[in-house]
Length: 219
Image (spheres, rainbow, N blue to C red):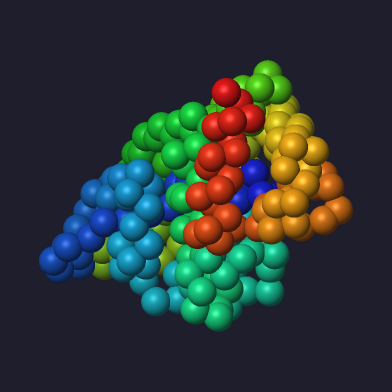
């Protein structure tokens, strides 16, 4: 589950709403629109705020194209037959209403093309295991009103970061074990075996069912 929590941290800082000619938009305004759309889960706007070929860069320097085909354990959420980070974005957004998920953020312009954004996110999976909020920092590069790169920065507090990841892992493991025990006939459609690794199957239908079960689990 650890890689999935990290994905949530990364993708929670992605989103967009864009109208008109964006080429004159200030980078800080683009960043604010990017983050505001997180609450809306608007994938079309998410795509529109990025330049063609926009990349995501990890702390180790490796980069991937945001909308290029991926060989990754991500479900084809939109059902178009191509796995991209856009599928992950949509699935993450679909889960946000569940488990008392909250996200706050702040951004500051670094120079004429770069904006640094800090996000803080937490949910009941983390809370239930005593973990601190997950704090992430992302550096956005904006050229001609479009995001060309998102760079995930190393955590400033690696101990707190690890504590959050571990807590979320434990929370999801407990939830998966509960589903397997309480609803064994549904388990194969909601998680990939073997239990309990937090390998959630994420489609529009399974997300809706998870929402009901998560409310029951934490209720």
